[in-house]
Image (cartoon, rainbow over all chains, first blue to last red):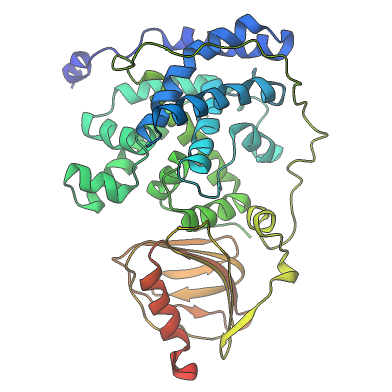
Length: 200
Length: 216
């Protein structure tokens, strides 16, 4: 039970804590100093990831370039709305990219909020003063917990979040019954949630 | 009154990942507007998306072609906190904003005795069905199964079926495996927002609902 499978798993990326710390620093420099240099670092870090995300979601190269650029420009324009000392910069960027994808690739109405809008919409009585500060810590915890998931659970959440496949298409892709896909997703989330509960 | 019935976590994950179909996403957004605990779940699920976006290997990525251009644009400043004024209207704010409606101005159309509806248009080419439904007190809907997923959010009043009672803010999240016979509350009736991702099946339900009277 000491997790040899875990040890055998390829290391994902080193030092998530440091990476997220520095992303928050970049964002706060963008907010407070309007630093071009900080923006360029953020741009270099995220643009290729967001571009690939868009390609995986069915954009052609030109559209993927355009949407990746637009995602990062939105970060620049809205940086002051984002409370960098409280939230997770990467979650904010993920939600910007996701919403652009629904609007511009799927061409549907976007019902999801950006994370800066959640923060405003969760009533303060439900949100202890310190809990939003934890969003960065929570981000790191999620990253750590993801590494402990069985490969079959990582696979389904990646297909959902990164490739943008609905449950029915994940079932088709993996030749699994729909119920199995849903239960793998529920199991994966239950484990991540347990890891987050420790922070609550 | 506290909300006791929430979306399936798998449905919330689809919402957070942006893969839920448009009509189902509308109902989840409406529920989330009424339920701060689901808003928090969604925020946590978005951390999962962010983690996957960051950790996903870029090894297959072609060399970078773009570069950041210096930006001098005006920066948006936070408004005076009015962006999310808590709406007290019984029509959840995402639906009210998207369709320019209030609870009092829903243009109800009669479907049959004791049944009114208002269909909410979806983006062009989108499959599925999204509508507001107003069922008179004590009215029984025909027993039905589901071809795909169906989400029902109670906005006012209540209904009961074989699985329990659903009140304002409650969501019933059912898939093809469920058959049920909902009955609107004996006193208050029920107003709900209902979505399906399979139009044909849903139309079948609507037809059976009104058939005895209109012969649709």
